[in-house]
Length: 128
Image (cartoon, rainbow, N blue to C red):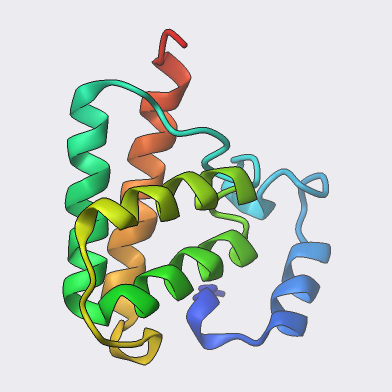
């Protein structure tokens, strides 16, 4: 069975996680820990990567949509509250565009998850 978090309500997702064959908090059958991104890497290249990602979110869903997306990613366990707060701080450098969360589609969220995974990889090797 393929699990798409965008197609399930919260109770269904909790049920799926509870019925997983792995330990609670271990990311279900994915074999990764939740949250995926616990800290932002600090290299200059990473900052550019983050700003590019956030700019894409703002371009697609406006400032409010990007903020709502970050909260959604926190809710889904993709990022910690601390990472969400740091990303929101970076949003201030991107600029304001009107819009909303409903303008972001599944593809935006899947690209965001891929970026979160890449940042998590970089965070593991970050010297700080």
